[in-house]
Length: 359
Image (cartoon, rainbow, N blue to C red):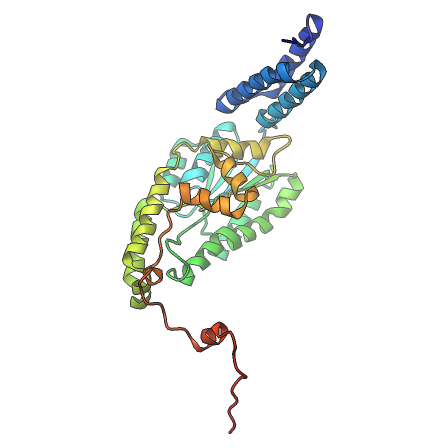
């Protein structure tokens, strides 16, 4: 078997020295991604030795190693100094943990909460430094947002505002659009879009002056309520649903949606640190990414959603997240609704001339 000649002696020392220098500068996170990348590079090295000429193999390995390090390396961080950050939705979850993290790092944190006496607000008061300021704000109330803008301007007159973390979010829709009141969708839009838009627009002059950062959190489901809240929402939906709709969909259909949601909750990872670390990096990285996909498997989910054909996306969702259930009125053997006159005309392959009525 022919044996390819690889760089040896001084050449190998030079390659190793450059690789070691790049590793030291990269500030890599030691974990599964790095170990997986090293394993893939080792497998690629083994294949290159057997399939490619030495120079081509060396070029391919160098390119693969550079791409791997670029993807895994942590960008150098800016000093915290006297930076001030406003975070919305700090009653619980990502907002509360991010406020605690940034406060411990030395930031001046302005944390908005829905209730100043909520358990999350009390926890922030107890464990954080005096530099953290709590402010009550309901994202559905323009007056609250205006007050938050004035509060922020007053507390950043000397330091400036470095960052805005749009974390507050809501998803209170528990069923199909026909079953859910329009008011639910309006509330979601007020919190997740209009309120966030009003706050961001109001803070842009401060952020522009300091050349700061805006970090907006997004999720396929938004910030979900607790299980007990969803149970109450389901019971409220069943109690107020018109009998016609309840008969068309069936109570078992709504129960199926509820069980499916609880199952998706069981798949959630309780460790919030990957998201918090991504927020910190977005605020302080010298070259921040446009998008972050923290959490195990999240990047793969978005890749499948954006780049694979629709049929494969649907199969993926059905296999891991959505177990489809058909409403009662659409099940085989069930009588369907009586078609309207317009629907009957649309279904007629040879419609006649329109009728006219003379007075």
